[in-house]
Length: 444
Ligand code: SAM
Ligand code: SF4
Ligand code: F3S
Image (tube, rainbow, N blue to C red; front, side, top):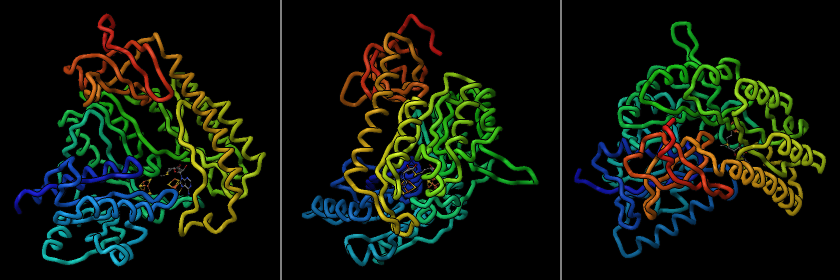
């Protein structure tokens, strides 16, 4: 096949970002070359997310926009991938004939065949749950990601069935990739120049792979990655409070590369709501993990996810969430109003008043943002370690992240990309720290 261009637009979580990169690794074998120019692409992939709001409608809206872009041009091969594709499958092609291929997350290994067949003129839909074949296929294809910081999926799917969540339906049952295959992929990334690896999974700390009567856990992966001298930082996301086992907690004292930052979604500060949500953990369980980690290293900071206005949430439940946020000064967090997802248990429940939910969200976000501003302010006039990721396109500045994953924009030289440098922080806002490389300080 002659070289053709492909544009991939990614919505949703980090796993979708990882998947988009791997899809690209696959289609490049067919001669597709990535383009940033969406209006001239030969193939357009929308990698979609179904977690909240009117996800399906947003996708059709986006396709309407793409149609307009190509009104006077040859139509691209239009692929809808990701979690909306999984949930909607062939319905999508029926409703929107502009779509040529619908590809669920467990069928990405079929992307090359589907594209080849499409060129022979067939409409197609692939939304089987076939996780093993998918990873088996991608294990044969080199991961070409050469960014300084890269994602690496180790586990996919979820068996927990929180009553609000669509993930078990779109990503299927929990599946953990073979331990050695993950390390082989990590080695590829490190050879490409990657300095930071974030292990990914919808329930990343539920990772469990059994071979020759040994069970490998995420702690084994972290301890193995720790041995690669060129790798500087290790992170993982998203973890579930119930799976924060002792071996993982111990990693914080054993691995100096594991960043002292834990994203641990709690969703609510009320045990009553947690039970209704079928979260399988209590506020007290969460605090136990928090306290144990703080005891190992008081520098460890936390972020979390909150759902506000879950059906049945009373003023008192909300106040408990607010109290929790005041107590654990989360370094940053995501908070959302409950959104009923098709097929989930909670979608059948009576919603609380929209305005009350909105008011509560504002209150909670004000408090979360206030923490964020304070924490960032406390870093002003200090020297912090930053892994330099890239030079910003439009500014003569470098971009990197501190150990807590906060973005840092600063003056420095391009040859510092890929290195960990000491940055003197001068100013900050809610999301970002600003400064310059302090040449008088030794890099960490
Ligand atoms: N596996 C993670 C966990 O157990 O917390 C969460 C994964 S989910 C992709 C990311 C976040 O989206 C959740 O933590 C939750 O706060 C939010 N979320 C999921 N379903 C939601 C819904 N129906 N309405 C609002 N927020 C939702
Ligand atoms: Fe969704 Fe709950 Fe599974 Fe997280 S643990 S992915 S919130 S069902
Ligand atoms: Fe969205 Fe699917 Fe991720 S629903 S959050 S893209 S697992």
